[in-house]
Amino acid sequence: MELRINRRALVGLGLAAAVAASSLAVLRTDSGIASSHREAPMTAGLPQIDNTDVYAFVSPDKPDTVTLLANWNGFQEPNGGPNFYPWDTRARYNVKIDNDGDAKTDITYQWTFRDEDKRGNDTFLYNNGPVTSLNDPNLLYRQRYTLKRITPNGTRTLVSDGIAAPSNVGPASMPDYGTLRAQSIKSLPNGGKTFAGQSDEAFFLDLRVFDLLYGGNLSEVGQDTTRGYNVNTIGLQVPAADLALKGDAKRNPVIGICSTTDKFNGSRYVQVSRLCNPLVNEVVAPAGLKDAYNALDPSKDADVAPLVKRVTDPEVARLLEAIYGIKAPATPRADLVEIFLTGIAKQNGPIKADLNSQVLNKDAGKLRPSEMLRLNMSIPPSKDPNRLGVLAGDLQGFPNGRRLGDDVVDIELQAVAGAALTGKLVPGLTDKVDTNDKPFGQSFPYIPLPSNVAVNQR
Image 1 (cartoon, rainbow, N blue to C red):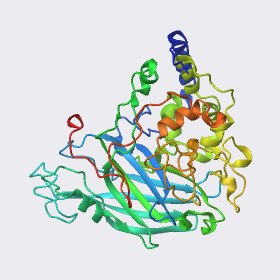
Image 2 (image 1 turned 30 degrees about the vertical axis):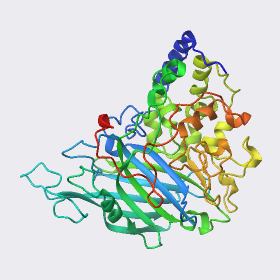
Image 3 (image 1 turned 45 degrees about the horizontal axis):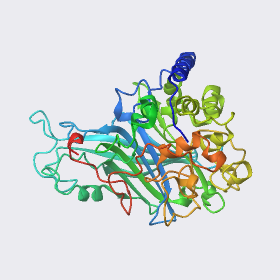
């Protein structure tokens, strides 16, 4: 297929998008701030509470468990001292699970952090010598955390005094960061594990999509924009039965996952950031809806007509047609509703697989559409994972959950262009960044260790 640019059409679409964004401004809320990779208007100055990514997958080395990873505070330059990248002590970091399809949270795993600062007023240093353990006296600043599991039946504290892995200062200060990461992993009462600390930014992509969709002619591709940067990561690995409706992962294997941040505003906590499916708030929600989306509970998604319309009639599909001549599929887009709002199921979907619609749960009630990352916990880990996930026939990949190696940019570009409808990929429609620059781990938390080399030196 010939990829060509129509700049007049592009300008027209840009004006239309601006008008649409201004008309949605009324949906902004005082409590909404932002989420994902700096795409919403109000979070650029509040990176500590900015959700960037969520991953959810059946653990490859422990297939009776599920691993959930959530990232915050993206684009961390490794050498960004002297304060580096602490967690916000006036925020609550949440991973939320819906296991019955009503879009309401059934289980919340909630982390809160507190400072242990021994620097006083006499030094600017993060550490004053090599740090060989999390309890090393040379580590002058550390953070501890509490992890709670919250359900309608009550709250249980799983970890009361966890230690977050520190920022990776450098090889002189932390000669064996892998040991610090290993020491930060805490066992949970049910046999699970948790971790909090700095990690490599594992979301690989070329963010020049914002420069007229890769330069207007796909000339701006192949550059991993996040290469060398770090993020803050919270990880959780728990038995699938802990997440399933009625504790039965065989009968009720599908869950919906979101990550949120609550910020204390002086009198109460309010939700200020949200991340479920990747890139939704970046390239699906228009500018005037982004802040409101971040404050919105998924159970309200179906009530926000502009958000639903952006899924059923996506702007990106029209831009692809205007810029590259890739004909936009007919609307309304039922295929994208399945991918982003309901989950895919054989009885109502173009992808012929009983995959991850929560109507597959035998004990669930009526399904309520909502923007969530959905995972079918009964699908075993792939022996030969394909980066394009479900579109390439690998049913354990995105949009059935999200693995670290899933190429979500290419998957979503292809899906918006109609690949889930036709069963065929659009040739040449790719950012040409197919894998992370660092290999993933073979055991929890799988996400690579953080870099200590300046980005411009890599």
